[in-house]
Length: 215
Image 1 (cartoon, one colour):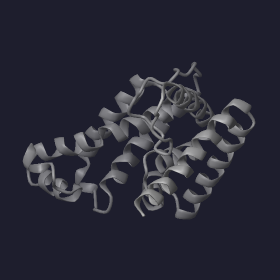
Image 2: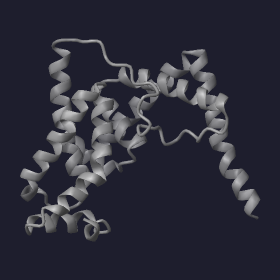
Image 3: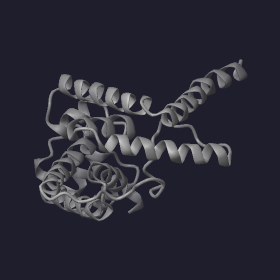
């Protein structure tokens, strides 16, 4: 499988279409964490997220001829996103208590939060993450998906438009509204506000210290 690892997505897709099935395993390795994380944050259930991940790759493999190029990641996530939303709506018709996610998946991190440098900061980071996850879970599903895909997974506006099947303007509007709701919920809670302000200060101070040190 090593010969395929450095190939770009579209080259791997072409290889699979040519009968080199092993190339698809590289795509699975490349994106299974992303697909799982998106499904997990939408559904808040690890078992369902695992099922969605497996199903998304199976559907992608069987429908690979329908991929027309561009962003394979976005195309794959659209499959997972649509299946996750179908599952979510089914669950909403028979409500159940969501699983607690805080501090249990080391790979599902918020990229904007600085790495901890002390036990106290590490504990604060976990608590902030728990509060953000709780706030995120209350967003409407369209806004939650936009925030997850942009702020957590790092997709572009164009990729998110592909994943969700809406216009760029709608993506930006959903992201703006989702962020505003998150800020309002965090600001309304004193502990959340203090934790967030502390991390934002660290994030803002970090680059200036590095740049001044390099001069």
